[in-house]
Length: 297
Image 1 (cartoon, rainbow, N blue to C red):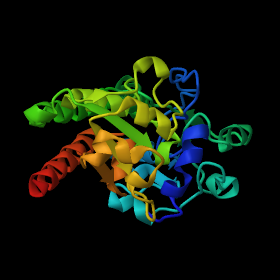
Image 2: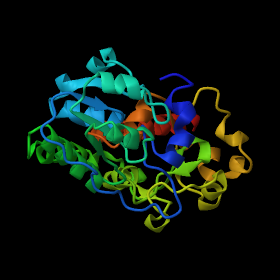
Image 3: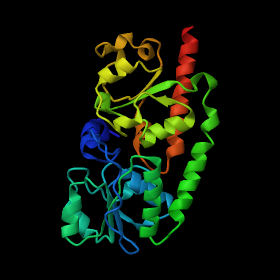
Image 4: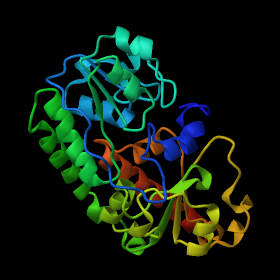
């Protein structure tokens, strides 16, 4: 992605709901159930990358007639019409595709207008692995393949489970702060990201009671003093030690920070069928940190 793509907009996405993540809010209410249950859909518009990925993982990429501007996996979807994003979905062009179903997040501004125009809209949210499992089966049922979503989740979960034993012993139980967009929010213990970290054997410094994606400033991480930082390596971002007080943080001082750039970071923050790939990116970054620390000795 480009600097002015989802990286530049992630703060807004967190606050209002968008391509990558559920919104960060004080209450961080549980994900809502689907808001529509259309008949079998053959022409589908997806305005959420993770739902596009889910649809394709269900072998239904050929039903897509349009996507949002951020979807990039699998590569075959990139030839499809781009129909806007979080705040600027192109209603006229969406209607022109004659979709049987529009997939989006509950907080997408286009949802109500599309319903008013008579389109079937399926609004799906995902903060946890349980939400992801439910969404996979909901999408499967919408395309007339009941049970396929449960099977997809079982495969996804099994691939993630296979990685559980690959975390080096010296990283087991280490405390992690997973930052989103330079401190606008963090991925907490209750989030799908936090659950993936836990499956690998890492601990999250953001407890479940704060919600899945709470709005936390950089000061929280400084106080928490984690063993490891995972941050979005955004183009032009200053070094971590340049942040106020962060030069004294152990993880920064000792070089235990994973700065993950796009498109790998997108995989980490999308609640879709590539959970195992997200976990592999985390493991690869930890290995890189280990190599760097070994070279500095």
